[in-house]
Image 1 (cartoon, helix red, strand yellow):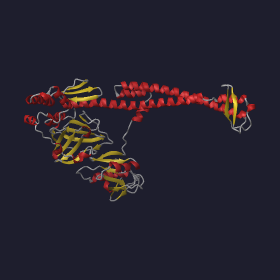
Image 2 (image 1 turned 135 degrees about the vertical axis):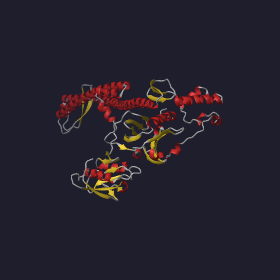
Image 3 (image 1 turned 90 degrees about the vertical axis):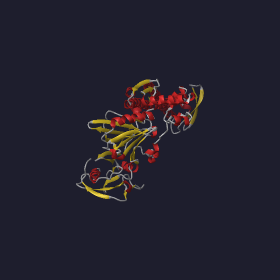
Image 4 (image 1 turned 30 degrees about the vertical axis):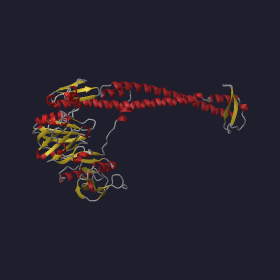
Length: 521
């Protein structure tokens, strides 16, 4: 219910009281789907974190936040240093707007996995946080306006169908109304019950509870699970929800990730045991090479010269046995060959049995670790279990997925600058991470990094920014030791890449050249 209209409305009201008159000092992202905003008033600071990842989708308000020096991107730069005029929830909508001076409106659309943040100026869309939500490319503030008649007369006209008046009621409210016998009440009593519930939603306590593996923020207490928070402060409530959710969510992710890998290893281990048991059965169940050698040695006089096969009496089984021979070897040398195979056969059996014993010990260790991880209560405890069982490389490293960006990120006078790491990364940078309005720079006629100055809506690229970043382009090239270096400068839209070109090479359709000294960022 943390993304329910009634809670968002209360949160927006509290933020309005707290932040009206404050200015936005920083606005950036340093990990996917997370936006950090830092507001200030004189010496006071207030941080706002929006984690819009589909499996998280929540707000929180940390006491402080340290911005990373690398891989960080400034966003919504048009509203930096702008003052907040008002923060307001849209009627009957899971969204609120921060109104800034200059006609700017920052819309927080809190629609679960489809949550997004959009910047408007005088209701004209300027910038989106999550560009992958294609429907938001055409979304306007007016599309979210829902003014609904919520009078007694409207309830009568709807024949008591409260959902037509309050479409933001969730499952919990629906269950409560049914429990109170709403469908069978007279209209006036229905209206009275609705008013009591609205009062509770707008002014009652907020609850955060841990229910098994789920954390829930509600405006009606479920009385199920561990109570984490109870009070009337929306900011404190959402922080309690976020920190408890993070602990539970990431713990279960870590647990699930490691258990999956360990159970895969256990399945592979038992398959290995089964395969080797069959192999051992074949080695031990067949005729022994040692016995064949003994039979040959006992019957050397009965073996014809240059024979390829001979049938001799097997005194181990009291039956005749056909023995294959190499015609170029004497009967004694053939016997020696079988003794050599017998030795190798014994070594193979010993090796298989040793490997199976080691594998069984490994399986016991894995199964013990699985049991302990299933009972672990923290990520730290899971990692200690893996370390104690010497499994940290086995499980953690193979499950750790790193998103490796093809660029290093810098900042120049408020503009984000991305520098390609190597030729292949340069191709990825301009092919997958660049927009046509971004400014591309590269030291002319020599190998070097591709650089992008990221476009900001409504802002031209200042000359001093271009010259400074051009110096960086010179530094990240083979001309870094020259006193002056020519650098190509052009919008990304004038750069082409064809299949026949080597990594890092492009075709430039139009360019300007600036002459600058190489300069380290």
